[in-house]
Length: 132
Ligand SMILES: [Zn+2]
Image: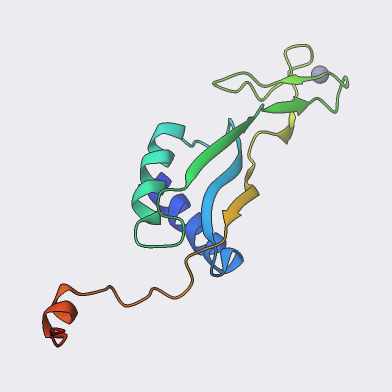
């Protein structure tokens, strides 16, 4: 599953950056030619983030349009989706300028709870000596 390996890589990369903080949101730049299904990535991200500082973080996706240029005639424009990678004017292969991005661009964190305190166990109370 392509998206799960991407989500796992994002979580692995963000965790050391977040340190002890809690991650509120992660913004990715994803080219429309990167063959990523946003809905599948969001789902995979939630799964990969579980049990980490990223648990519950919002995944934001900035989509980057695929653009290409023809070295023959200099025409430049969107590749469209599915992409057309040859020049309609002179039939030369186009040079891809953008659309294959897959990067983390922004991270929003909040101070974390720090080391998890020992949960106040009910048994502590029961063990306490009763006051008279
Ligand atoms: Zn051309």
